[in-house]
Length: 167
Image 1: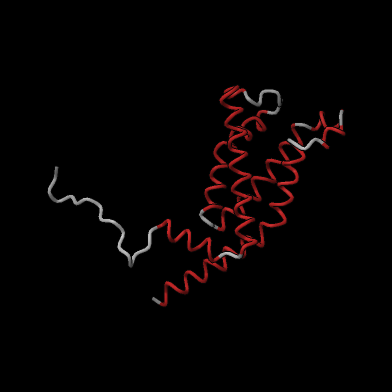
Image 2 (image 1 turned 30 degrees about the vertical axis):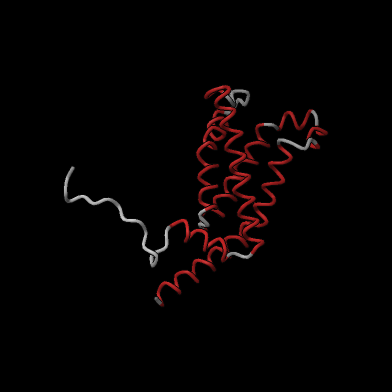
């Protein structure tokens, strides 16, 4: 072992850890924004699990029922996009709110496109409390709350930047 290498020292009390900084940022958000961010994270983690289960069960052909190859690729890519979005939202990054909005709009558009024939043939199925209806409702929620959440995240970031300059 090289004598010049030192074991990492524990964080000093004067220097907060990343986890404590993240807890502090969450505590600075208004309660409504915490709930919105938490529901975003929950929704995207649930989406990740659903797409992972599809891929584990059927492999890369999980979405072969959809004839459009770009849709198949998109649904598979959600295994990366969904957890990345959840991660950014949990880290309270402004990009996370915007990404949530973009991913959900794309996901809903892809689902409606992929399922259009089924919807056209059996419209009452839209009343089912799972699947396309939930995806659509979650998308409307994300679209309606994206800008206010992003604005709160920006306000919190500005407060953090101004307080770090004063120190």
